[in-house]
Length: 429
Image (cartoon, rainbow, N blue to C red; front, side):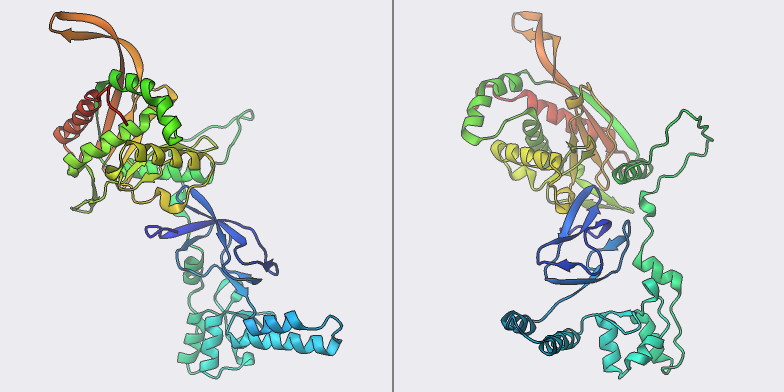
């Protein structure tokens, strides 16, 4: 899941109880933040129980399903059994399979139909609790399943009537409320006519809406704007793009050039590369650049280029293209969107001249790249000033005024401007 991923939402079960599952076969689809992934099984067996329903939020490391497996010896016995074996022989093998499963302490369904997890079975065996006694314990888990707390409470009570744990507490642990994705309704009344259409927000839409509102409520947003002359970059790209593609097999756009410039300037302004934890500031050592990319459904996602300051232009181009392609094809992994320390979004790709983006928490700043346009401009020369056509763009910088003042925010984008305008049109790549 990635070391920074703490929880995931179950979006779809691909298998149902009783289904046979092969090793590496996908059994569930999960979502972390904005990335959907399939989770494969690392064993072969039969799906016995699903411990969480769709839309449940589960912490990484939690058990979400029980699969019964056969040990190697049992599998070998079944494989070498003669084709014309008798019914009695088949019954014997079936019994061996049941014994092997039980000996491996996997979950078991009793004759009454109740399921007991491996942990509960192990505790019962250690405490010499019979199956009949186990079935009499009041379960507080899903479908009245006996949990670890239930059997421990039963033992502590002297193995008399069990004192079940609060049902509400267990339900909350097993199926946490997805309150973080709920959108607060407006206090103003909304009238709906018969011609209006009610559309349910998508899961991603709810997540984005929640994160945006939370960011505005957390950070004091301030913006600075500056215009950049990128004529040299435009001329340079026009000159080398065919050669670059022939040598590297990658199309070079303006984005990796801008990303490389931003990464290098962050090294000069490390207090832009921070996060806020209460009244403490966390100064990030790594420069991990987030880049807004389009998904197939038109939504945006922010995959992260790790250690962006260590990449040259070729490396940055390949990283940008790889993340953009995998975002469009729905192939991003959860770790691809984790660990960002600063974000760049290209609003110019939609024709916008500039924008005022919302900070991607827990970062403290985000840079928006406007559209590159041909504009008339005053050109200063030793022979005087004259009007000429130049390629220019606006960059806008949103930053958290709690920890980034106007001087730092302004100096940062001024340094980015100077770096881009100093691009050597005759440089190689």
